[in-house]
Length: 281
Image 1 (cartoon, rainbow, N blue to C red):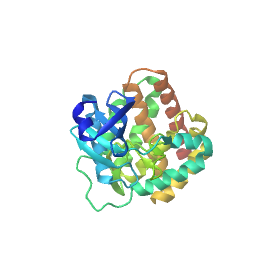
Image 2: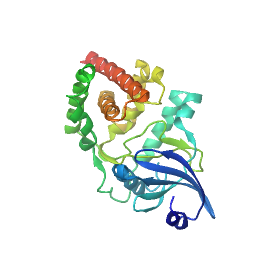
Image 3: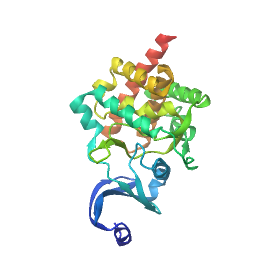
Image 4: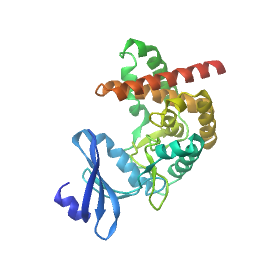
């Protein structure tokens, strides 16, 4: 971290906690102030700017507070080190879902200020699925075309359009600080509120037993539909569309065991939703 940022934010010590292709993230101790998180975007991370704009707009409601920003560096509230994944492992899915719903209600609460214009529309967010659905591996083609068609139908008929976190899942909801459970690392999207729970269905990481449990899928759909005022089918359609998008993102990245596991898991999940939706017709 450069000297200018250390001086600006009175940083006494720092510890690198993440180094990704898009950013470096530090937990810092500050002179005369509480610990904080410093996130510095790399050139490849400019797509994360709308997420920072979203944090600024949310002003601490449901999400970690953005304390300051300069260029592509920002100082963010340290929300804690306990992830909802850890909590899920100890207390189970129903208790973790209660927390998701509490955080979601805060994130979707009205704001007195207009949303930032830089938020990414959902159709743009789904570009990788629309671009990749017809030219991915043969064994994925049918499901990706189906999820792309789902996404196209959903995006053409959006309701309850609002700013969205866009990447809400069990590792992006954390606690341990004085304000309890908070969302971190938003994508900063704008679109149908039902999309904001889509990624919960594919998490927590390593939780295939839960993720591919039809009873859990039905339970989440019912709980989220009640909270968001829409049908369980709509929730599930967005979840399946997101599964297709996640597969395409994994295909775009470097080949890895984690990517292949994500592809297999998301594909299996989308198949379950497809079967469930077909049974309802």
